[in-house]
Length: 274
Image (tube, helix red, strand yellow):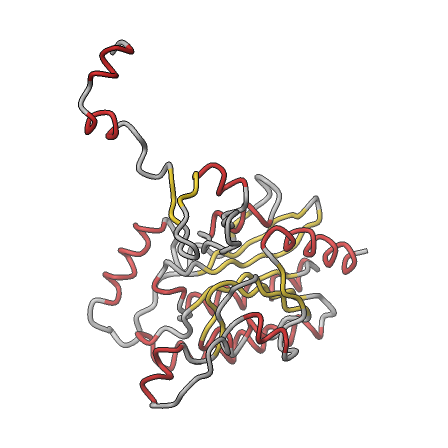
């Protein structure tokens, strides 16, 4: 098509050639952002500072060195102890949608050449909920880190325990907490990164057991989410379940914008592994 043909083409045809993901709207300020600029800004709005939620692969990209990741324990089978209606079907649909085998990715990576064990939770996989596979992967991550003498970094994003697995999911709280205890006894550092949101059984177990707890600015966190609290008839003061309030009250050690997290992790890992 020549330039004159392009100018004479119907507007609908011209606009149909524009990629649908070329622009993104910021949920914080409703500004239209150019996708390439947003990626360069680590998916943080340049207008209002809103931190977009990241996929597992985006989080890995902003945390670890390129091509340094080696996945662990991908082969663990799906778990359906209660034969919960349509549970396996929904889980398999989540696998197809996200490209993940479960709600956490674990393995070994490097940050500026420093090796460490890493876990990254995927909120888009059944709400990042923790069932048997998630708990088992997190536990094995810490146990293997002990064997290989590696520091551990886990990025949490979760709605809590997975209700379709009932008590099995709740048992993962004790199991992952025990693994964190063994990691501490082995003298290996555990850095917990809390992202938006971190709720429920994950928040009440390994996510809040880090030797150093870092929260991303604007992240929501708590044991029960606002909608669950509303059902009880209790009133929750505005802003209580935020990283900022948790930081003010000493529950977390560092409150950082996304761009400062990787340098902070580098400093911590370098200090811990010298």
